[in-house]
Length: 178
Image 1 (cartoon, one colour):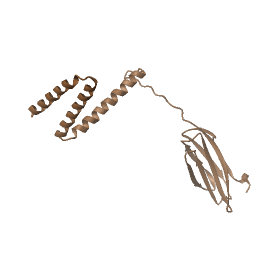
Image 2 (cartoon, helix red, strand yellow):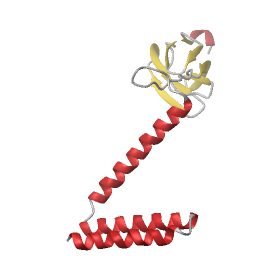
Image 3 (cartoon, one colour):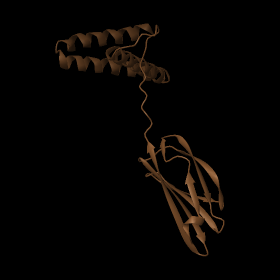
Image 4 (cartoon, one colour):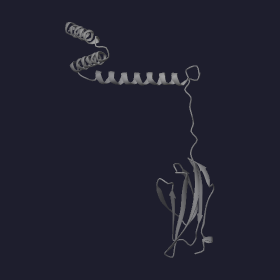
């Protein structure tokens, strides 16, 4: 078969990720037509009519996407390939601003992010503890207090005695409260 009788074209050869391209093809003699799109990550086969056009969004690519049309005529297959250069989407950098619209520096951003994470962590722990029965809640509180005492006593040995006094006082308070 003469390749002049098989028409295969695309509207743009260079696109940015996410752009739409239109593919046109025509081969009146074909028994079957198949389009293969290979973006470097995976290959997709699409059966087509003998002529027409179709639009595709080229999202993810390793820099070049190959579009190959394969036609079958009298038991033989013929193909044409088009290469489309796919440029990466430009990165958009957002700036964090306060309520008055002033730009926050990196230290403030770090501080606000840390505070937000701390408040989220506390809320999740509080919700989890409140879902426990009352005795288990007391056990969680005691274990937390003992853990803090042990950590602080590793740093400052004199804290151990003071921490144990706080623990005894808390237990006395819990027993007398009931």
